[in-house]
Length: 234
Image (tube, rainbow, N blue to C red):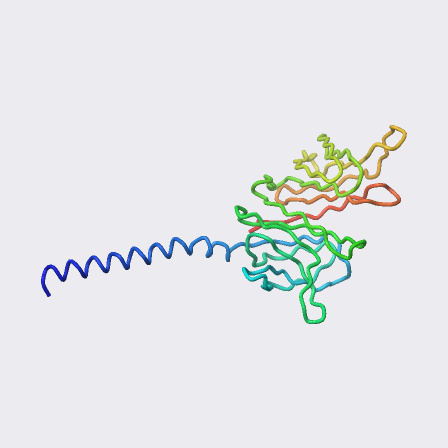
């Protein structure tokens, strides 16, 4: 083989290698998408052990099924396979999937937390997506969701946090020497007074995160539900 032929062969090999590397770079975001993970936190369920399918739509609008989960109140799932973008919790009816919950998995989230709450009026679920890193949801903190229709005042130890209806806030309660803190929840009543609806000592754990949900309640106005998340999220 002449020197000219060798040089041509080398150029072809270099071009092929460049194309392969280029394909690898293009595929890397898709590979990352397959590694996305999320946890479902079920605050309340429409029925006990309700079987739902975590699913999405492909480019043609057809359903892609990722994993099946049985929902029940206070459930925290293991890490589930997912992808970024629009996701659904669906049920199978007459052989077809029907969405009963929709949320968006942020593209820049390494791990996603999705709190789902039953909505009996519509027979669906309301969803709240949380990127723990972006929300600074670290060990020892409590992420509060005011899902009631009232503005609330929450005391976690000496820290007071006012949270409007539909809003959320992050608090790190200071612990007493016994590892406990006092949690008080109240809201303003129609006469301009303060209506207390929760007052008790609870245990704190610097090695866990807590999701605190303020839920509507006919008798007390607001009902508190705490769901601790132990250990690493990923």
